[in-house]
Image (cartoon, rainbow, N blue to C red; front, side, top):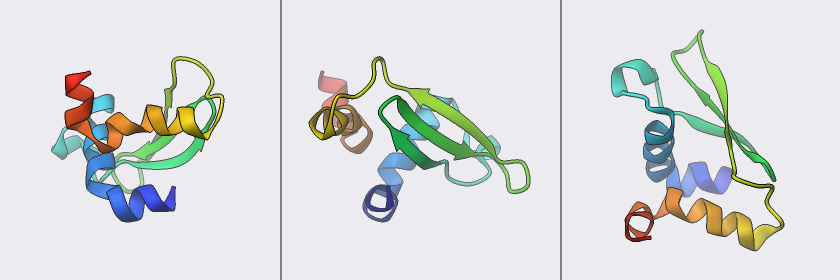
Length: 84
């Protein structure tokens, strides 16, 4: 997760805003991935003092690292996701 935040923060933030339907005014700061497990992403978002956590579930449990990489690819490469 640290790699996502450190190296791909802009892409991850934009993807999470789209998935959560957040606008800049209601976001209160960039949404961030708190935890990744085989069932999905746990995302923290909202204004300071009123942060919320939302689960973005995968369609099915992830079988391994290769499948996780495939599922995270649209988050990091939005143009590739548009072509698919």
